[in-house]
Image (tube, rainbow, N blue to C red; front, side, top):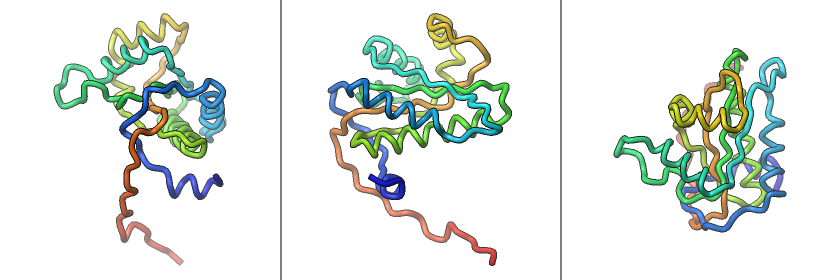
Length: 172
């Protein structure tokens, strides 16, 4: 699949089969994420690749929080969660992390998988449990959660929603 086709046909997937994605494919997706542009090439974002079910479920609970508004599993059953965090010392960390998230989603789609950006990574890693997880993994520094990219085999084929009109203003 070429880049334009991937960008024009990608959809957010919110229902997954439980089958685990092979590590080799996850590594390809991560490579695409790590090759996203970054301000001054600081490469501030890092990726926490979670395939361990217990850790994935723990992250899901932390992400859902205590607010009843959030789903019991905000990761929609996806077996893989790629958490993007970024070093806040880089002044473009939020934008850099967002570019990583987009590359992850496009790569997953190009490789025949579903993906979706799940918010609340910032809130998850501001909690003591989230900070403890990073410390346990040896991740030190002032990192902010940018997003959770859930990945897996789609168990749904959602329709692509039409794009809104009148969103481009030309200055010629």
